[in-house]
Image 1: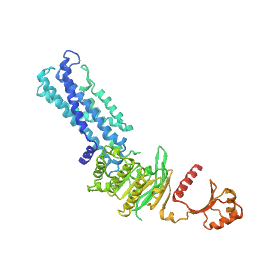
Image 2: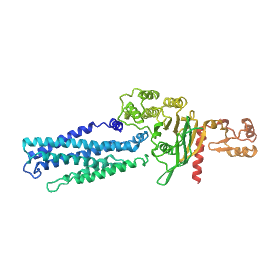
Image 3: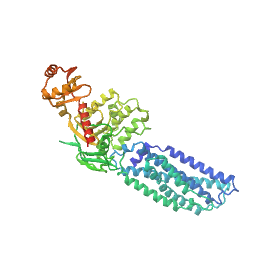
Image 4: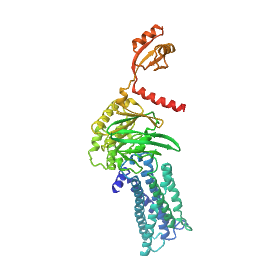
Length: 229
Length: 310
């Protein structure tokens, strides 16, 4: 199992993923801070710290759903497109396991990266806010605990949601379709305005996560049945 | 007799259209089996079925005397293959690709990578990604990968494609070494008989998804493929003479003023005499041997004619 993960990482080094994650974190922190700092009177600004964190998290989730789609495109769809899958499937290794490892890697990476990023970005924002007092709101232990739990739940849900593009990618082995479908998911799950926010409802990504996991298990079950022509 | 591959009633249909029909193939252990047929005859599809990349719609396959199923993974560790064309992770170097293969196959001998590269004579490629390789180089690397783990069975789909004449020669002797010295069974597909004629032990001829014939090369070589070729401007008169006067029915009138006589009872002198006495024009009379290429081509053509008629 670990060996298969190692081999996947040899084939597809993930430096770009780390770099993208760092850039995303920094850009989102800067964006949220600047918006609240320079436009204190406009309507788009957050009414309290909690709302600012909801938006910050939803940006990060959007980023990592798209990155998950890129991972699916690279680790799975590209193998079909370049036909390297027909080399991979001539190895004496259970194909379901090989395929499952890829999906597990993608979901785990999404979860860990998102969870860490969200903790980091939210922490940095709260720190900046405690000095500059840009957005009103009290931060106490209970608030922090609530935030961490919410980030954890959302991260798990997002890791599952991120698998949905697999379905669209596998249909025609299309990398653009994979990534495009992730954009649609993001547009839906990260929608937010002050009066009504889909982004703050955890049940949406949780429901999508179930769909994602169902798609993943469907794909794994099918991997032995499909002809590679 | 021990067989490495046997198929019985092997068939494959796509959307109801049969592309492989009732193939009964027998590849003996340790032999070189030439899989001969025109492009699109079904060679690749059969090879994909042998490696479980494509699932048969009917019939069954036995590899090493064991029934092959969709989840026969272990047996794949005993096979090296190139199917369709050599496919690699293009951004990686040749060595990285071979290392990856070695790891996936669970083969522990690390020297095997260098040995395989040496066997196919790929040199000076250490820092080059595979995408910069020519087809010939990829073909060599494909063979290197297939033989790296010293498999018991090699399935090679048109391995000689894209090689220069020297490369073809090198590969032929490599295949012979693999078969004779390492006892590896080789299944090699090609659309040109000339490529494997000298090294194959058995030839399976496939056309239109059906295995037309499976013959041992020793048998073919022993068969009477000699004939006399007469070139004359009076083909029909000559034919009448040969048929009625000389009582020979085994002859064929071809285009370009050629008449071929397959009967071995007649000699050149008698034919010449008979034609001259009847005042039939003779441009040349030669004794010839039908090449195996012609023999197989004939087989495939007769088959396609039969199919057209049907």
